[in-house]
Image 1: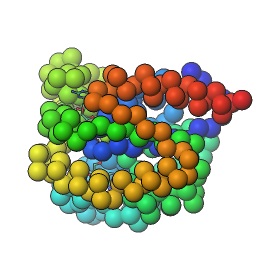
Image 2: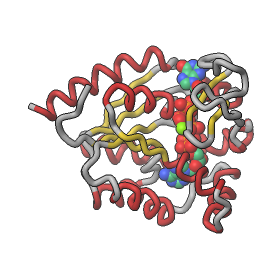
Image 3: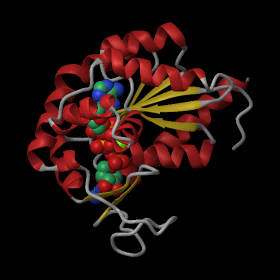
Amino acid sequence: MVLQRIFRAVIMGPPGSGKGTVSARITKTFGLSHISSGDILRSNISNKSELGLLMKCCIDQGQLVPDDVMSRLILRDLRAMDHSSWLLDGFPRTVPQAEALDDAHSVDTVINLNVPFQTIKQRLTSRWTHLPSGRVYNVDFNPPKVPGLDDETGEPLVQRDDDTPDTVTLRLKAYENQTEPVLEYYRSNGVLETFTGTETNMIWPHVEAFLHKKLKQKVA
Ligand code: G5P
Ligand code: MG
C-alpha cells in the first residue's frame, strides 16, 4: 500500500509483547519507517561511547534510560524525518516522554499490544536477535533458516543481555510502574487502540485491518 499522506503511529506493549515482530509486518505492508528506541540504544552501546555505557548499565539492570537522554535521542532522529510517515516502537515509555513527543509531533494512532506476562517470559528467553538490523527470531515461533544466523545477511545472531529471567522480571515491573500510565495518557487523548491475545499471528490480522481503515480515513 502506498501512503498518500504523512501518518504517524506509536506501538506499545510490555517487553516481549511482539512490538518488533508486528512493526516489521506494519513497515512491510504500509511502508512506514520503523524507529525502535531499543535498537537505537543498542547501536549506541555497540559504538562504546560514554553515553552508551550509561545506557548499557540501565538496560542490563532492567531499568529505563533517563527521560531527557531518551527524548533528546529520539526527537533528534525524528527531526531528520520531517516529511516521512513513521512508526515509533518503544518510545514513549513514560508520561514525560509522551509529553515531549506531543510538543514536537502529533500522533495519529497508538497500537497497544496487550499480551499476558506469563506468555512473555518464555518468549524472551528463547529470542535470538540480529543486533545491526534489530531482526528477531524465536526458536519455536520464527526460527532462522540456518540456526544461529540472520536470514538476510548470514551474520551471527545473539541473545540480548537483558533477556535473562531475572532482568525480564525487572523490565516487566518497570513497564507496570512507568509505562502503563502512558496508556491512560493516550486513552484520554482518544488515540489508543488495544489488541489483546497470546499469539502474534492472531493479533496481526486485526492490526492490519485497523490500519487499513485508519489510513483510508486519513486520505478521505
Ligand atoms: P526494547 O528493545 O524496546 P522491550 O523490552 O520493550 O525492549 P522487546 O524485548 O524488544 O521489548 P518486543 O519488541 O515487544 O520485545 O517483542 P519481539 O522482539 O517482537 O518478540 C519477542 C520474542 O517473541 C521474539 O523472539 C519473537 O520472535 C517472539 N514472538 C513474537 N510473537 C510470538 C508468538 O506469537 N509466539 C511465540 N512463541 N513467540 C513470539 O527496550 C530495551 C531496553 O531499552 C531501554 C530500557 O532499558 C528497556 O528495558 N529503553 C528505554 N528506556 C527509557 N525510555 C525508552 N523509551 C526506552 N526504550 C528502550
Ligand atoms: Mg523490540
